[in-house]
Image (cartoon, rainbow, N blue to C red; front, side, top):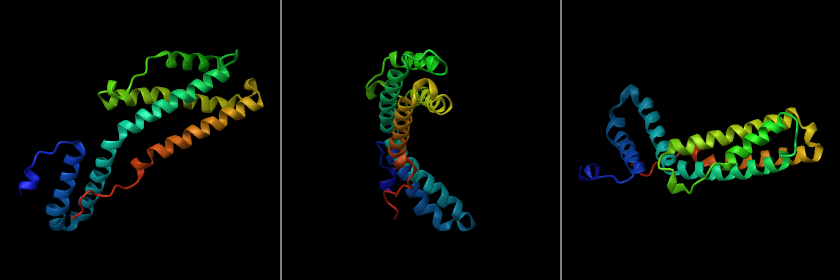
Length: 172
């Protein structure tokens, strides 16, 4: 009893304590609802991992997105045809925005909003390199397509811990 009454200092610890309580006290007497309780416990286990890792993952993704967008802008800034002209200008405008160290982002919502803005530009570049590669020339278009595919792979690798089923800290 003293264990569950102790003050938890992190969000992950609070979530793990909830899952532990469900596992130890509710699940044994859940009867027909046991599968639902197990689903809630699994969700809490994943949330515990996500809450701890997500900020760093999103911040790292933003760093990678900015590098990717700088490369796209460098390759397309001389293009005078759409979609490249508008995309290059939009990328340059976004890259001119001040980017901060992680401590400047006190809330995940701020990081996520920046991540979505940058990802939208990357998605536009993906669509443009597929729909209108001709103005770039074959080699430049292939270089961009390869770089974009590399970004998508790195992003998937960064986010892998968020998709892998979490192992509960204390399954007893």
